[in-house]
Amino acid sequence: MAGFKDYILKDLDVFFNTDELASTHTINGKEMDIIIDDDLLKERKLKSAEGTFIGDILFSVRKSEFGKRPYNEEVIIFDGSTYRVTDSQEEDGMYIIEMEKRMS
Image: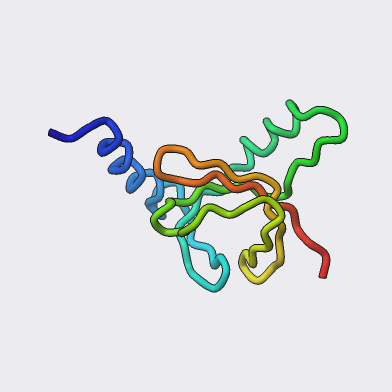
């Protein structure tokens, strides 16, 4: 009998379908289907306290596709541009990653 987590993992296939919500981007040289969430990024900006940094981009990606969870301050090359991870969270088979653009 399938458990609740099994159903959630199957639902990820729907969410990360490029015909639905996801789009394909190159992260550290590997193409991945991700969901960019500008609304959640804006929501975090509204809730943030003065002096708290909020990133330039926030996206969700399947753990199985991304690999090891990125740590804060880790450098990621996203579509050819350099970013620094400002926050990453693990949630139901995926990562939610927030990054700021780095000046080269």
